[in-house]
Image (cartoon, rainbow, N blue to C red):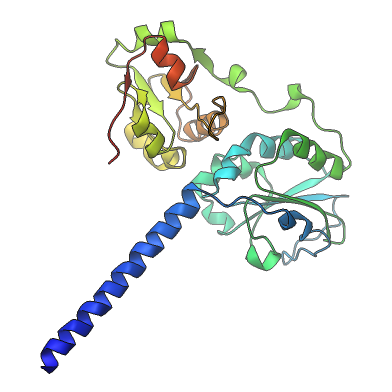
Length: 301
């Protein structure tokens, strides 16, 4: 009798452990693929607080922009162009930029290289929760005392990006001084040319969207390599002597036109691995299919 009871108790314990493991995996996947949206009080709550980053002194510049980032933050990737504009426009008499990460600066997450923050001179490790940062990305403008004067949380709109430059008492850089746009850095491949290129077995089409979007529909023969996997996978899976045709259009919200926010960070990640010959496939999947480009749809794994 005792043996039967013991087996039942052991079975219950195994069930509880399995359920806990499944719950953890589901929770982690949900927060990765569906990042939390900022709440109205998230930014105002930071204003007036003091930022303590150990030996960082705030008196070297009139203002300091503190970027609280994470390599697994989808909104961080979507804001990469804005971060690079801030970094390129920073100057001691204007403002400086400090990046605060949850990893040690010497172990820079490959995902963060896509954001261009390796150019920041001052990269720090800190407990973001201890700084009052609940969500990434968070942008804080700090004065010479280390006190937060203004803050923004999440993916910023164009008007909010302008607000950041105003908060550091400097004019927003003209577009000509922003990092190279997609049109400048990647020659687009339109449907007619793509149709001909796909007949060549040596053509490499790289789709950097998440796997779920890739399985829904993708250009025939394309390789799926989500953007956060480019740095570790590209050196082993992509030829450096060929031109890579990059598909990076994404629908960020239902019923919206496709956007290209993922394209430039993906190009930078490829460039980091030594792949510099990159061309952008112009147009979304629907438009390509209507133009006669072969599109595959696969069942979800």
